[in-house]
Length: 366
Image (cartoon, rainbow, N blue to C red; front, side, top):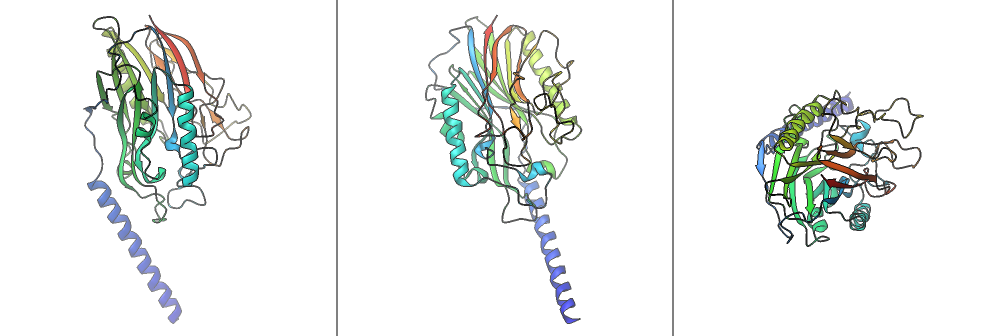
């Protein structure tokens, strides 16, 4: 009886401590929650000496680099539907893996250097990537490029998995990075209107579109390059629809003003009319299913530039096993009617360095 009372006492104390821990992190998270303004002008590091485009044919590279933490040996507890405990899945990859993945990412970007490089999930400082400033490290590869950074994940402490307080995601400061061979005269962060409810939103990404303006050879006519990372873990797709409506309004407005518009993104949705399991037709049902962007979202003269022959994203339920790990296409471009698509090709890295693959594109301004 005495042993039972002692156990009960410790169980009560443990429960009270856990409740106190949760209350403290909710109060702290709410007090420090990053709440960006709807529109923010961002600084540009102006390293390029080219004030305007000097050609009509341009190349682009778009890649969600997964903060160099989601390469071939990675799985991820959150993609397994875990919240309280990791259940043996990774919260972050080992430091040696992160370093190896990041070296591979840098080498791949250099090998396919384009006029414009659009990256998502780039850590400036984060526990999950061992506080490597990935933005600056990639910038050093392109000393003559202008560059800009838009924060979309700014949390002093992400307390997941909730019960494993010694094994949490922790501090994250990350976002979108755009590099340009040409000078960027204006860079603006547009906050998407959709967000998760409290308390999930205080430990999650603040999704945004980063819009960079580049001068062309035609007076008063600009090329607007939009870097975007749209919502994931949006079960009913409501947030993604709100983001798409916002983006549609933004890009059509720019186009109707007479400008060129190119969007490179991790859309977290398949392109219109693409069957999500087309690359793995034997899969009939999957938690990986993310739906499609509606074919009616954009006017018919806009172009969805997607290579649907090679996957751009793999699931993270388990470590990579080529041929068995589910893959699909959720990374691609959107082009305004005055931009001609010449080529779009997914670069097959075999998912060695990220759970996404880079997409290389060449276009011609009409």
